[in-house]
Image (cartoon, rainbow, N blue to C red; front, side, top):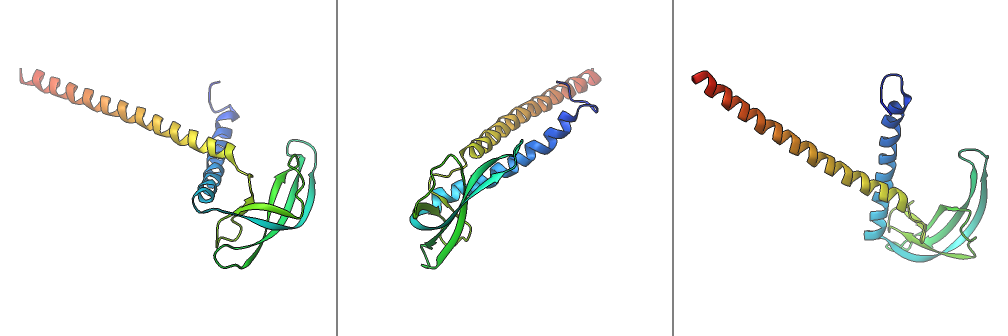
Length: 159
């Protein structure tokens, strides 16, 4: 499809792709933090709410799981929550959580990862690096060809 002034696709891509990259960067950062600094513990389930959204494009449902656990460094009790897909089993009285010590809000039910966004982030970074390499290669070739042209022009002037 050709992108021109009359096609809304170009404008949409200029908004959607950077937004997806921003979100995927944020979620990939948290995945890295959980991988490097994360700990796992048992948490007491305080309550579970079934959330039903209206039908349509953004419809569906999920489970809002509220839980409490001691922070690994300070033993301070943290009360946090995670939104789980409705397809996940309803948690009982306890649930395993992954958390980053000392970071309020930095927890999730164990296994609740954002792999799709992380893959999007990695593919985008690799694609950008490959594109940058091609641009750099073509720019160097253009500079070399320009230098060759200039040297041939100087020789022709001297003759």
